[in-house]
Length: 390
Image (cartoon, rainbow, N blue to C red; front, side, top):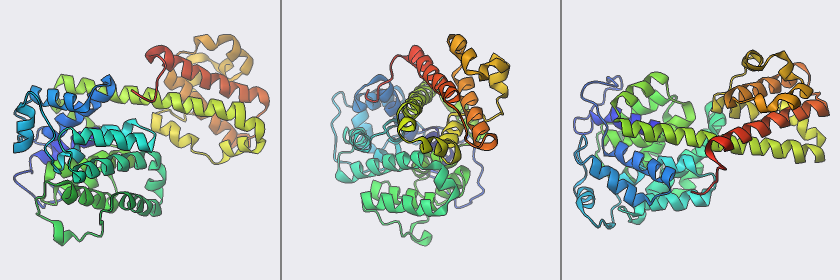
């Protein structure tokens, strides 16, 4: 979602003044947020509040009736209407605002249904819906395979195959056929965004390629940014620059969205490993060794911002005794920091992975279980029981 906003703001300066200079200045006084950011924030706000997407988009757009670059003529009429109705559009506005859905849902069919809903309140042409669903699915795909895509180029080929098989888009694109071609349709924008992702090597590289193509710079940048964020991550400097541009109410939605999403995912993360240690390990002892030797656990920890710091933060917070199962049993109610628990689990995993040869006994297994359960309990105390459906 922040990737969407960065792509929009970086591209905004060049929407009607296109550039082919890859080394263009990313931020200046001439950059600002456009309708792409407003609509994306509206979709995120709808997810947080369980609201109808069309109502939320309509309300947010009315709060900002004159964004940089304005609204398209028919969408502007939709915004001004007191009873807005879909108007058969297949414009790329359906695809630029959908990234929060790709981040929110873990079930593919549910994701596709909600992506459709974000589009059809205004852009109910099949091409508009296809564009929205394809971008949401792309975000979903790279979130689940981020580490593999980063380190194995074959997985980028798999990404391309996966999305073309769903959408039917042709990604066999030649730059000379699309450079300086302004196309505001989904079918003229989404395939190019996917093609750019497949050619890129970092978040900034992807944004620069999108904007310097000389096309619909802000929207192409927004769609590319929405996907690139979850492959390469976003440099902190870029995040700080765009957050300075956003109004306070938009910042609040962005921050709440990421915080809620992180907590929900950590809950699912904790549930997965609670189930693993309670059930799978009991049935298949060797699976336990696989957990330490070759698993996605460290990648998940990095994704949440947990640190593998050789136990330093866990020890500093709770003392050396906290590594002992009996002490933990007696003091578990005093373990109250989710991030420190996560770093402790990560460091504990690394101990067995690197030093102990994955030879843990039942008491040490119980130590892991207690911390996963405590992690889940703390999140549920903060936010209530987190449900998959809003």
